[in-house]
Image 1 (cartoon, rainbow, N blue to C red):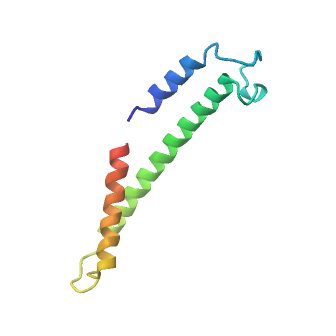
Image 2 (tube, helix red, strand yellow):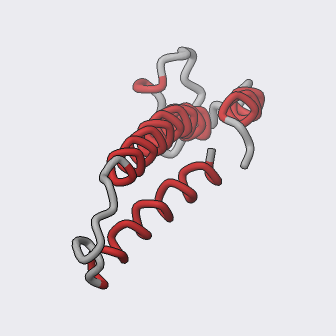
Length: 101
């Protein structure tokens, strides 16, 4: 997975002189909706937000797995298939979050 800084850097490089609506301002709100400059500006914002969401999801997943693992195992309690599946899904979510980081 390409890191956020590299992605934003590449988008910023593509953004230079990319205006296709001939607007002379760096404020994307003034550019037409289909202007390449505006589209790239919105893409940069989306990359930043998605990275922040991924970090939050990873932290939440790790906290959830620690919470689940904090319970002591008591034979006969939590042995139902649903409970075992629940714990395994929590561990799987944590592994996925780590892999995506």
